[in-house]
Image 1 (cartoon, rainbow, N blue to C red):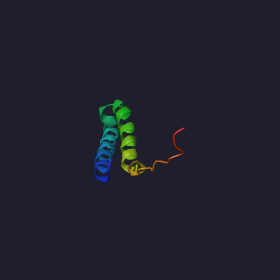
Image 2: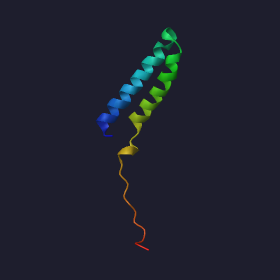
Image 3: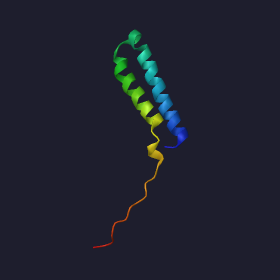
Image 4: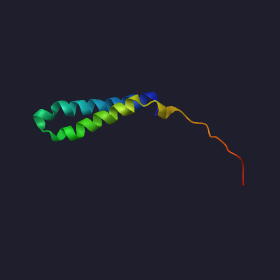
Length: 64
């Protein structure tokens, strides 16, 4: 994921998670089951920068 798509998807997921957690006392505590994991996954997507790095292939020896 590039910076724009990571920011959009992570930010939207985290925002929906916060809204679900904030609304849960009024609607029902079932929304906490969806809100907390959605918030955590959204933050993970938002701050994951190691995914953009491409590792070099290390060759070891030849054909045997």
